[in-house]
Length: 112
Image (cartoon, rainbow, N blue to C red; front, side):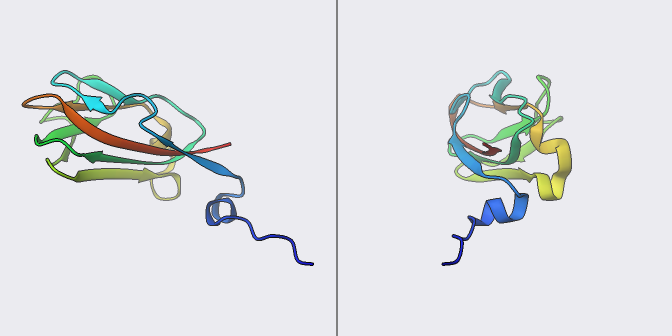
């Protein structure tokens, strides 16, 4: 009998992973909000701005319209993968909405 095949992520990374949805918060305010903490085990993240207001994501508490990645309202997104972006994926990420607080969906995949 053949050994069971590993899931695709385990095949790609060489270890098992798990999915975390909104590991810190799902609400981003009009002041910088930490949405992902430093995590050396993280291999991927996806951030989706579900709110009705444009937002920005960045790697420090100075995230703003002039220092961040635009996440347009109603589904704008950004992602990072260890395979493509290297260690960028492990650092803390902060978000800000410019007009009013809103809901974002934050997903991370990490080693278990």
